[in-house]
Every structure is written in C-alpha cells, then in structure tokens.
Image (cartoon, rainbow, N blue to C red; front, side, top):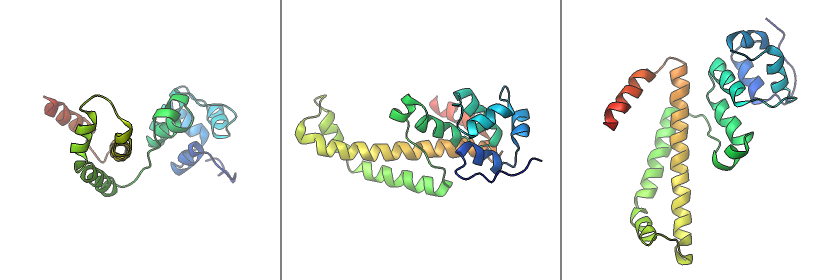
Length: 172
C-alpha cells in the first residue's frame, strides 16, 4: 500500500478515498475510466472533475454525498438550485422531518389563502417567506433521507430493490 499523505487542506475527494483505505492506484482499478493520475489531479485541484468522475468516486468510496457536494459547490446550476445536504443518522433525519411537517401543518391554511388568487401580494410576502423557509427545511430533510438510503444501500444494510418495489406498489 502507498504511503499516507501528510498534506494539509485535503479535498473532500482525497479524504473520502483515504477513509476507504484506498491508494489512488487501487481506487482507479475499482473505477471505470478514471486513472490514478486523474484522481490525483482532482484531489490536488489542478483539474476539474467531471460528473462522471464524481459518480465513479462516489460509488467506489461508498460516499453518495460526494455527488451532492459536487453539485452544490462545483456546478453552476447546482450552486443555484441544489442545497448542500449533510450526512446524519436516521433518527436525526426523521426528527427533523417531523419537526418541519409539524411547523408547516399550522401554516397550511395561510398558504391556501396566499395562493388562492394565483399571486403573492406585498402584504403576503412575510407569511410566504416563512412558509417557503419551512418547506426548504423539509426538502433538505427529505434529501438527507434519500442520501442516507443511498449510503445505507451501498453498505448493504438496506434492501434497495425491495424498497423500490414497495414504493412502486404504493404509487399504484
């Protein structure tokens, strides 16, 4: 095995690879079409990764959060529309989701009133902004849950095929 890097300010990509205990060469062997030299250039930020590179790394390192990181930090579209999702435990995600749903439940009637005429007037802006922030928090919790599912499925701790089959049945 290669020597451990002592470099400060390592990128998230280098940290993820090292946490998996992989050298660049071994990681490259486990990926399709990403050379060890390319991994090094990405880790040292001398070359921008492509979405393909990131998906390969995320799968190889068991870190689906690398995709979210790339989209929310490196992609111009994602920078505008994709919030950074932090990895947390299932109970924390569920509690955050329930808290957000409880917050929005009391605001549902106000949202209906605001949207009834198809426009948002100046006197409705404050309430709409509050509701929008609450919905953003719920959306973030849902994204966090989806990321948790992907990571857990990658670790073979959840049967993703069964989960997807059940979701399809429920769509109905």
